[in-house]
Length: 132
Length: 247
Image (cartoon, rainbow over all chains, first blue to last red; front, side, top):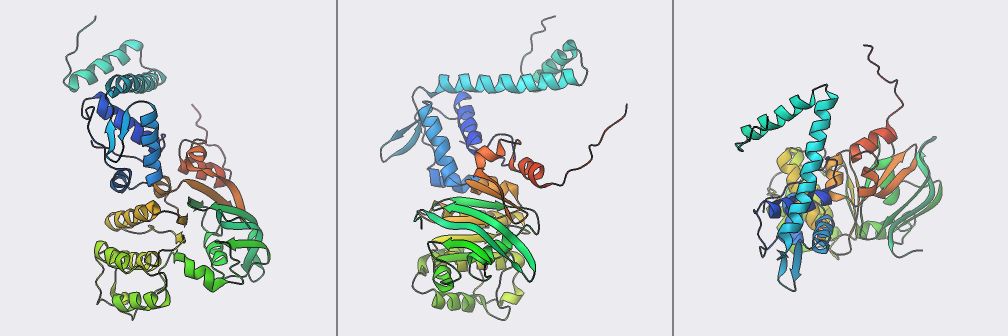
């Protein structure tokens, strides 16, 4: 599981780790049963305070995304996928909302904003059904 | 005096000559925390370190470091404290291995040989090189090794990663992450690099005008302005005229 953090971002480091794990599970890059790096090892990779990683793991465990097997480390929990999909959908909705607001604030018409979304989708290679 | 505070300062004043740098400063650094000390250039961060190490007398107030008064027990404080100054204080004529041997001798009661060897290897320090010939990055790493190998109860870092190239900076941060993971240690670090602070600290204190003007857990404080840099600027920048743009 590839995780990164950006210390100056609006979300704090621990929330970024939580979001990164959720996204990896929602997208299928991390599957239930997969083992996560230890707190210490992830802290070294990301160069962050181990307490911050521990807090992120704790929050993810509370939300049913991770599970601890005694003496064996931390794993993606069996029921993690739907939880993470819901959380990721909410995060994407927020990002799209921000993008739409930027467009409208810049004086674009709703149709122009919609066209931009379609254009971006098609550039990502996603099939785009012309609705109008 | 409270055992659970690594540092306890009450209403302290200190300065040079007639100039007061710290004035009415009160600060508590809880044991086990990683506290970042933030402030503009000249705010008194380095002066505070000197006060904690007993290198500068206080004019009033109380100062306790690991339960000891540094003005009376400077040696005992230094014995349990690792200090990495902004500019490493190393004799340029010494070879690396001799500088290490010297500090090992001074700190032999607490010195951890395995940790010395481990850090010398990960930092890739050339044992026979003279300190005067070392790069700034190598000097910073040597200075950090000398502070960490005695396994200090309290680590004081004055701008630990400023002015280092990205490779050395990662090595230094990585060593600090390992140190933070060690049970029971307390860290107080001054830094202008807000990204390093967000990575490493769990608490922040802002120093301005000789006293603490804001303190709290990083996550709470940063939320006030989106990130720490925003809080730093809104708290410490002088008020400016608003720039307006006439249509």
